[in-house]
Image: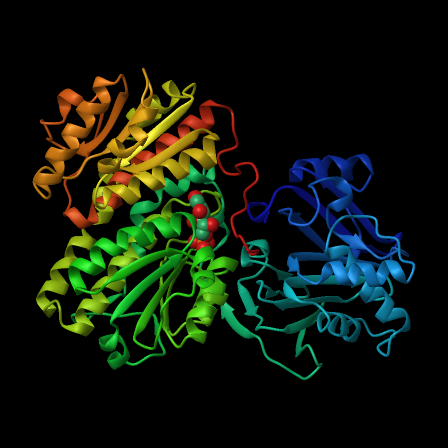
Length: 597
Ligand code: F6R
């Protein structure tokens, strides 16, 4: 689970010999492992336990802020994901009643409150009831997992707007934020709904709502196994995931074109609703947002519909104009990004329809949407998105075709032809992958660069933004993506001798006008001393004289170009990061799923 956060890690185990044993350490999981060895806890003999990897929100990533947190008597242990928004008031209330808190976290308040309920409340001696009573007092998003020294055969977990799944094994039961935590032991899982609490024991699980009324989780079987979440001989996950991109694309397309029609995975809105759409918003964060920028070009061209692409974190705070004929496409690999989830909720409150593009079956965003198209990229462990991004781009094209089909802006044979072109993309990406050696070599030579600029036009512009984001997050290098035409309006002042500039060229055949303008832009920056690294279509001889380094990608239809031109930029960022000695899979300060706003 380390990919979800790696600022610190901790465990709590209910042992027969020593009761509740807790060990926690700032930094990577390896630090915790050494701490456990030093403390002589090589192997625990216990009945129940929990582990946590943290991405810090309240409180610096230091030992005392690491989870699990305990009450003063050290009998209750709590791990928590999310943010308890009313924690300052709860903390003040605890302090007024004489409780001394030992961390700066919001989580610790929950440990003390649960202990107080368990010892003195109307729910005394009943751990699930005590947790429910506390959950009702908490504002914000949270998943809590709780154990008590008096209840060695019980683990209680609860969720609100933050993920929680149960794993049902034989003679053992698990709870986790993600099935990856228990896939080694069981593929039978149960997804909990909003404001639900589960008590797990050796023999199974029991679900209630926060008032104690019986409730039901949703059982499902995980359709991938441990090997999908292992490195398979690769130096790092990201490289493995880059290489899995042809499969990720093929799997995303598979099953979405049947009997001559684009089909979604789930549709809780009518075909008429789709026909009535008169405006599209794509809302997403980070790389997913870049996939939305690509979608804008395709959807506007294919469907003649206005498309706005919005950062999910901005969307609901600027009062967007939405109504029931607005389609909001929420793109999220994890399906649990808090900014995107809140944007979805805002859109639905305003009566807009929401279509989710998501890589995680049954995650919160698809559950709260009117239609869903799953990207079947498989689990992505590297924190920087690669195969999930490419799958999002492909899925967004499918959304565009589904809209064109519903609105009749494309005839069925045209939809079939576009889909056929998409189906050729996995092999085009495989061709790009065959040439990554050149890019890795280039990356290792660029390790000492101070900054890198990325330029693109048309669909190459979002690719430039994505290339810059990959470099920032992996290599901690200053990187900026620009629309090439915008350069002369300011950013050209950044060009200096030997500054590497990566240029994503449009196709000379597909967009001849843009190609010519781009060649002029390259000569302008070369004249000012930049070192040009050009990603261009095979056989593009016009650009060759302007390229200090030329990386060729196969010729593909204009709108689909991001699927091939992004790949060298992923490899470049990963290789620069590796050459600088950084952990490619776990860049500093980041986490894979950002479940806080
Ligand atoms: C960048 C990256 C992030 C995510 C973003 C959205 O490499 O991975 O920018 O794209 O946090 O995440 P999801 O798609 O899970 O909503």
